[in-house]
Structure formats: C-alpha cells, structure tokens
Image 1 (cartoon, rainbow, N blue to C red):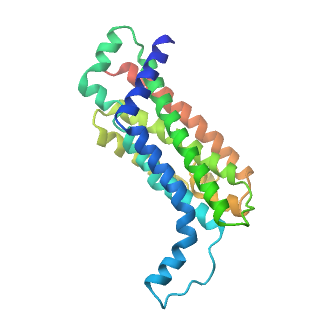
Image 2: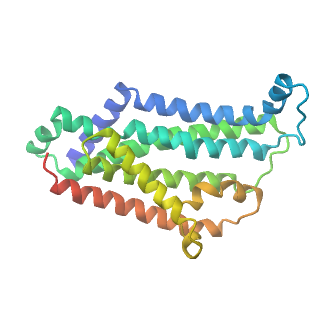
Image 3: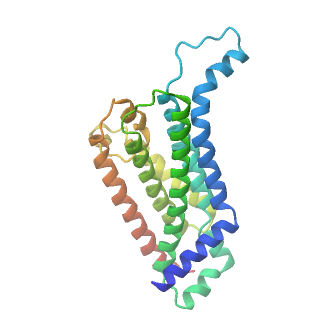
Length: 252
C-alpha cells in the first residue's frame, strides 16, 4: 500500500512537470467555454461572412450541449488518450520500472497508480469543462430548463474510465506510444461498430457517448443508460485487472 501511495505521488508530480495535466485541463476548459459561444454566435458569424445566408431557426441551449458532447467525446477524449499513451513507454525507455520493481515496488501498484492518477486528472479536467459549459449556457440562454443534463454528463464521464482501461492494456502490451494509442483507437472503433448490431445495441457502452442529446432533449430516458453504464464500469474494472495480469508476466 505504501508503494502504491508513493507511486501515485510520483505520477501526479510527473504529470504536472511534463504539462500533461495542464494541456488536458486547457483542452476540456476551452471546449466547455467555447461550446456555448459557438452555438450562440455561429449564426451571426455566418451571416456576417455570407450576407445571403439566412438561419432558419434561432440557436437554443440544447445546441450548446450538442457542441459540448461532440467536442468532448471526440477531440477531448482523443487528447486524453494521446497525452497518456506514453505513460508506460517512457518508463520502459528510461529503465525506471526495473529499478523500482527490484527495490520492492509491486507491479500491481504500478498499474493501479498510473490508472488512478490519469483517472483523477481526467475527472478534474472533465468536470471543470462541464461546469464552464453549464455556466456559460445558463448565462447566454435565460430559458435553460433541460432535463437530465447532469446525468448525461455522468454517462460520458464513465466512458472516460473505459477508454483509460483499454489504453492501459495497450501500454502494457506495446512498448511504443503510437502502437498503444492505435490499439486503443481500434478497440474503441470495434465497440462503436458493435453498436450497430441491433440485438446488442441497447447494451453497448457506446450509447453513453452517442445519445446524450437524446437524453437531454427528452427523446431518451435514463433507464436506457443504466445497463450500458454498468457494463462500461464492469469492462473498465476488467480492463485494469487484465492490464495487471499482463504486466505481471511482462519482461521489463
């Protein structure tokens, strides 16, 4: 336990020094702020650029949340995966893992500490971005009474843990950062493709990223998200356990 805590401290310090956290925080915060502004003022910008272009409808608060979930589930989580794709490859190249393991640090503690630190930094960044989106949406639209906004945000947040667990498996299997990221992208793509198979689509974790707006607009109900959320959490735990098992057998 002491080794786990010490390694977590090392991870937090390292992620601050190499600007991983600062970059991730900035990405999520910018998307949180810009989502509302883009939804509100894009029609005016387009009208200014093209005088003959006329918008058929006024933007509403729901448009801001469309921007937010699109940006976070796409670019936001992609940035997260890219930033932490080197969490083990750097250790491999420097040879620090061999030194720490020979001094008594358990391999299990290494994986758990890296996962915990990355998950904590993602959580902070995500919810700060959400708070910014919520605040600016409320500021720009007086009528902002939308249902299940927080529940939709929690659903997307859960997917972040699943992506991270897949990334940890990739980082254990492959020593190169690019290969680990490619592995993660491939597994995520397979999960999304499985969402097209009707019998299992309603259980697919991909629902948590693709139907957020349906939930906020009232076209979907929270009950539809419960099973995919439980499956996503279970897969996240399984992913971490798999990464630990593989790392225990890996030659450093």
